[in-house]
Image (cartoon, rainbow, N blue to C red):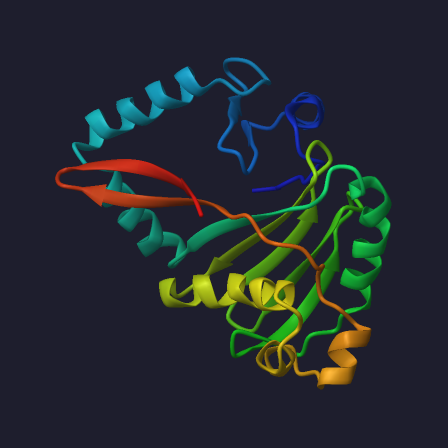
Length: 219
């Protein structure tokens, strides 16, 4: 199935759906649009489709997710937001992108980096490791935030992936340098991210009894 990538937002996704005849479009925030309805995100329709699928299969969300993982392989996702000073964000963005493009990590959370992709949108860099997991850093176009995403094959590796960014945020410790395969001086020269206190927003599925909830918490 062909997949098309565009900048974030349905002002880009909708036209691409119409241009390519795509059956659906979606974005990281959880918004989905469907060709048989509207080329615009509609949470009510998405929920109705999901409830209809649960009714027809007689399965809970956790069972459906487990079934999907059996077909496509395990996948564990999490995002952290690093909040910057709004007054200096515009000036800092080009500098952060320069550091991201200059960084050449050899390892991430114990996995060899196999491929580095500079996003077509020009606002981030994505690192792929040997087992197919990835780490993405993207600068927000609407808020003074650097968004850091990861998707791993092993649930226990999600936090270590994101912690690399936290370590860099605390001042490029030797441990962080080791993870990136760089010495202390090289880490200082090729800062992987930025200085500043990180504020994180996490999205993760939690099971509560027989039901599922999407928990959102800020640290």
